[in-house]
Structures are given as C-alpha cells and as structure tokens.
Length: 242
Image (cartoon, rainbow, N blue to C red):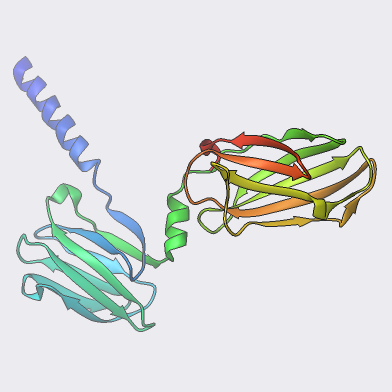
C-alpha cells in the first residue's frame, strides 16, 4: 500500500468514526403535552418509540410517507420518503405526546426512544447545573447581634430558595418580631418572602434559628439584609450561587 493511500484511508476512517460518534442509538426522552420532541429517522431502518403506557391512537401530519405499527407499549416507525412531519400520540392513560419526525443520515438516526412523562419543573431541574455551595459567613449588627448565615439552598421548585441562619444575642433580651431578615435587589424586597424564627424572643447570650423562604426570579446578584429598628447590615450573595 502506498503512503498516499494509507494517509487517505486513515483520514476516511477518522472522519467516519467522528460522524458515527454523534449518533445516540438509544435515548431517554423527558417530555409532556407542552413540548415537541424530535425523532431522528433514516431510510431503510425502523425506529422504536417506547411509552410507559400503551399508545391507542396517533395523528400524523403526513401519514402517507411513514409506516407506523403498534406493538404493545411501542410504536415502530419507518420512513418511506425523506420528508419531515409531526406526530401526536394518545395513550390509554389519557396522556398526549407531540413529536417532530425528521428523516436524515444513517449516522444520526435513533434506534429506540424511551419516553418518560415529566413536568416542566422536573425537566428544568434536570437541566440545571448543580448549585454551588455557599460557605457559611457571619454578619454583625449593633447591640450585640451576631448572625451566622449557615445555608443557602435551591428548593425543588424552580427559582425557590431557603436561607438558614443562626442568631446569637449578646445584648439585652430581644423579641424576634423586632428583627427583620429579607432578600432584595436594587432596594426592592423580593415579593412573597416568608421569615420564621425558632423562638419568640432571644435572651442575653442565647441562640436561636431563623429561616427565610424566597423566590428569586432573575439570575443576578442580590442582597441579604438584617434590619432592627434603624440599624441594618447586609451582604451580597452573587449569582454564581443561584
């Protein structure tokens, strides 16, 4: 074999390997009746769409160019022409799914799709990157109040968070109703916040816990503010922790 043929052969092998590496033969697809998911088909091959509940009926935008068969909880789809259309599937449980059928190259088609019904929040949560852990820090307010910010945690619902604090009172007895803790941005308190204390009052040299529940709609830096009478202390929590 000549050197030129060897180089060409290696290049072709590398190119074909890179193309086929893009192909995901079997995929799990999270969806619901508010989303349209792409199904990648190719000429001369069948693709299986597998559901949690038996499909009973389908509606296609162009059924003449796709061969669809019902097999238990599965649909098998084989394209008869290289065209694109939509497909709606109705299951025995009453759920509805929408798909876009795309006919493309052999290197990109799906062998099997496992369809899972998920809520919008579940899908969004799965797509979120893990939350960066906020290291505990302390704030000090006049009259001997020491506030330890212990935890900032994203809750199951999108854009909902809790802030856990521990308060040490080194001054005179204090009613917790006189202490305000809240999150804000640009001097605007976030709407719908809830603040709860472990105790109604904190005696001298006594500790208590507090929790703030809040929604943070925009991924931007915000302020955590502790306010008592005319005195105030604040800290910025940056967007990297949202």
